[in-house]
Length: 326
Ligand SMILES: Nc1nc2c(ncn2[C@@H]2O[C@H](COP(=O)(O)OP(=O)(O)OP(=O)(O)O)[C@@H](O)[C@H]2O)c(=O)[nH]1
Image 1 (cartoon, helix red, strand yellow):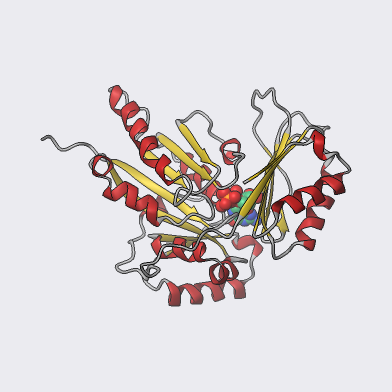
Image 2: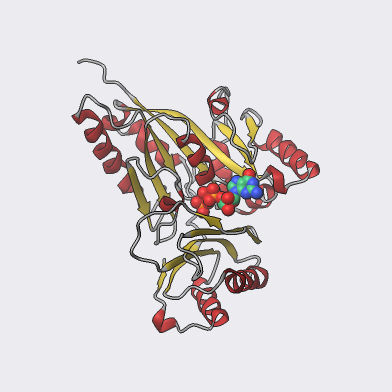
C-alpha cells in the first residue's frame, strides 16, 4: 500500500493561564497554513475569540478535558480534518496545532494520536510544547499533578511571563527544571514577537521522567460561566475581580472572558492568572450580534459561590444573568 503523507501535529500544553493561546497566536503568524483544535475546560469557549487569525479551520472542544471528559472527541475531530484535507488538491492546511486545556494531561492525547491505527498512519507528532509562567510555575508544579504531567511529556518547555519575573525567580525555575525535567530543553519567550522557528530547533529530550503508571487523579477543578447582559465599566469590573482574587486567592485559579464595555464598540479580552489581573486587551473588530459579555471562572472548590459574589459586587440580579456550572 502507498505510504500516506503524514500531517504534522504540534501540541501546545501548559497550566491555566501560562500562555498557550499567546503562543498559538505567534505560531499562526508564521505563515504555515494551519488547522487548530482548541480544548477548553470551561463550558463557555473563550479562546477562539482570542485568536487574531480567524480565517483558519478551527474546532473548539469545550466543557472538559481532552484527557478525560471529552477524550473521545479528539479522534473524530482529527478524522474529519483529514477528510477535509484529503478532499482537494489545494490542501486547506499543512499542519494541525492542538491547544490543550490548562488542566489536561497530554498523555491520553498522544495515546490517541500515536496508537489509534487509522490516525497514526495519517498524522505524526511534530512537537509538544509546554508553557510555564515563570512567576507561578513552581507553585503550580508543586500543587497540581496536571502541571507535572504537562512538564513531563513536553519536548520543549517555553518559559513565559519573563517580564513579570525577576532574575532570581527565573534562575530558581531553571534550577527546579534541571532537577525535575533534566533532559528537556527550555527556552524563554520574550514579550515581543520572536522567531517561532527556534522552537523547532530544540532537540527533544533523550529521556523523560513521566508520572508513574497510575492515571491522573480526577481533576480537582470546577468552572462557572457567566453571561452579563449589562457590562459595567472597566474600573467597576476591575475592582470586583480584584476583590474576588484577593478574597479567594487559594481557590480562584483563573478568570478569562470576552467583555463588551458600555463605552466601546469592540470586545476586550479579560484575564487573571495566579492572582494577577491583566489590563483588558482590545480584540480585533468582528461582526457579532451577541454583545453579552462572557466570563469563565475556574476554581478549586466552589465556583457557584464565587459567581454569586461577583454578581452581588456588581449589583446585578442573578435571574438576569445566566450562570452555567461545569
Ligand atoms: N506580561 C505577560 N503577559 C503574558 C505573557 N504571555 C501571556 N501573557 C498574558 O497572560 C494571560 C494568559 O495568557 P493566555 O495565552 O491566554 O494563557 P493560556 O495558557 O492560553 O490560558 P488558558 O487557556 O486559560 O489556560 C493573557 O492576559 C496574556 O496576554 C508574557 O510573557 N508576559
